[in-house]
Length: 466
Image (spheres, helix red, strand yellow):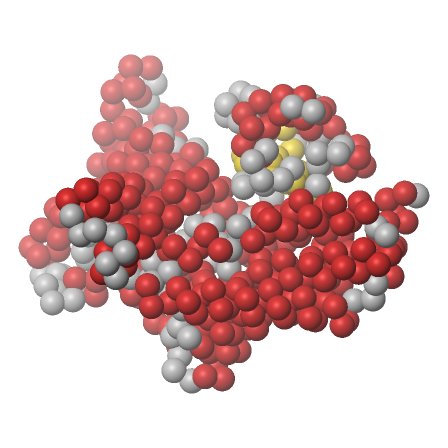
């Protein structure tokens, strides 16, 4: 079945086009906002051979896992996100729904994160190869390296602008005004104003009360939220041509001082305090503290994904990179997918003993993607449906996470995990990162092999044929 037919099938079994208020895609999943979850036919969706799993992680939200390379194609064929652009999202409250804001803001930026992160890593590898005389030190090599630097800087250097635009879309404001607010936070004029007020510390710009980039993306998100309130207030009171002419100007005039003199200093202070607190654990010189922090972070990362808490980690990656130039948390949690690979390989041999050809075929198709950092096919197609292997995979991944934290493995960006992520590791950390992956592969395999009976794969086979 092609992408168009699969898209039509998903729309039909999700309650029809009128039941879907919004749709976006992750690497392997089509995420739907639905008005009435009871209209979603899980059994029918599960029955489709191209659907790996269906997840309801919060009322009003459904994720249909279709595998790497398909989710974006399926979403394009749905023609829903644009059509239902103004449709209200399913009502949802609570802590998880607030965290979901981060996901909804950053998920559309994942392709750019990947391109920018990997480009940064490739530029670093070229520099290493030149230093090791593996590549010629000439103009052509330097031009090629700078092309990759340009790709990386083109996104990461202006992340505040993209965050402002995406935040505006989530809060119902004009995306261009959101981007304007984010772009203004990066301007050197901010430093000029800070100097005039005596708030600027030339020796420690990042610790100034106010400086360009203060508060980072956290400040931008909160600033755009305030902007959305002001814009809606003015839209409700200005009509016709007056609304068109003056609402954008009045919105920015009202919000910019609040953002500049209150939100940026406050969020900047908060970011520094959060960074300092996290550093107590993520950069601890105490081996025991580092090992426990790494183990827990890697072991619990995928359960966090299941309930949506992982959305809160992206700002932490960014905070670490802004403060130290690299993040130790991303390489650590990247071990979670490697534990899944190890567990799946153990299950493959157990399934082989029991003659479960279907499970073997699923694992054979999903493991290569797992090595490349795309873990959803393994999670939703293999370990999670069997339950216990999902736990043993996490326990195995924890050992790799502990190694990465003890060795202070750092990445200069964040993108896809797995083997490709070696390109974004700091040069001195590349080998330790690969060792961490191998530890997670091995321990995920060993723990699953010894603690999961082969009969569990037979039960899976019987369930499929029943």
